[in-house]
Length: 553
Image 1 (cartoon, rainbow, N blue to C red):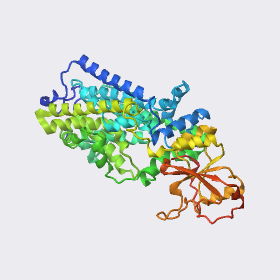
Image 2: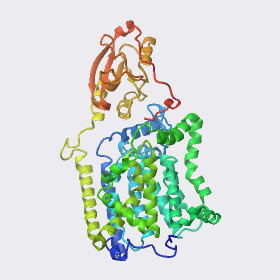
Image 3: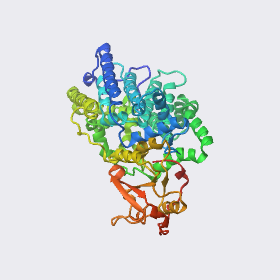
Image 4: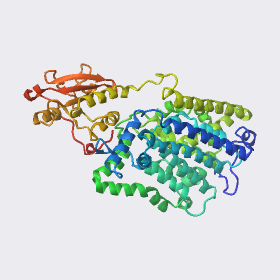
């Protein structure tokens, strides 16, 4: 049986006393605190300035900005909206946190970034708390630097992202769990369940799915006898589970999500709740409606997202398995492995999804350095720390000087997905007319054009619907028609239910111009001759699904 560190015993140093000093054992606590505070201060200055100095970054930020803008404009503070439709992509916690800053007068781009920035700083702070819980005699400066400079963290906290709140909530929950397992919590483990509350309120049920099972695995790994399915083993397992107060804890963790779901269901309908909770969390997980990738995605993305520490993670897994009798390494092992395994099961996945496992992976990488280099681990860790510091310095240079174009203007080009949208808006301002989008307008287009009329952009879902509205007089001569280039018939694309077939005839539609944005957008003007246009044969429209009444991107 594997034994665990008693609650009354101080957690072990890094792998072995001979290598602990390479991490910073024995460092003056005051110096260590000042270094950590300096790191947080540096990050706060960089992020605080950068949130004002550049435009929205596709593809996430335009949708967050538009949702916050429409929630305020329509006073829809409970149900997120985008292009006038209820938006089911995430629970509204992130938007709720951004709205007060917008109401205080901050630019919209800054308001939507503040929650992510605050989450990033709190994430670094809680990493220190987690480490001090597990390794009270070891300095946390190097792990904090390693965590802060991870490429996956710099990008996903720098842009508006609900994953930032999820990552913070998971770290808080595991910190509370570590304190509980070490006997430092009496009664209800508030930190554990408040962390899960934050995670579920930010991203939904996934906040529970990537925390509680990982903690359960730690319980089983601490006492393999629990897997024997005997009465005694069942009683011991139940006592461990009951110790974290699961019933009260789950009630707390789901309270805000349940309250929001009930009110949203009453305000919109229960299909909205079904879409937000079932469609978004279970249908996408199992069927991969978007972001479809194979089960081995993270074996490809981990190396760049967690560089340079990813190079040591395989050795850290081996070291943690050998040291699984000690709570810190056992907990880091189950946290990291379960998170990566869980998201690998999903058909729909992105590299950023394993961001919540970053603290555990950093700790594993430090353990891997001690396992691989032995008494020379300090040199390897200092080299990794120097690379992380260089990455932070490069990030600060890019964020403060290059991104806003103060130096090397044009080095960071305007993403093609938004190129030309300003030209489109200028034209529509100079030639005001109703605009109709063929297929649903995407977030950057909505964000750019919404202020023209402070109203949603009308759209049609099929060629049949478009020509039917023209013949019914809903779409009239003089109106503008915005069409995605890939929706037009082409020799290399078969005609399907979403193809605009037949294509706009020059006799009835004048082509104004095209822009690169969104894969290519073409603006047409509806001509007076359209009144005499015969009814064309069109593809059968796509079926209307129950979730199509909402915006799911």
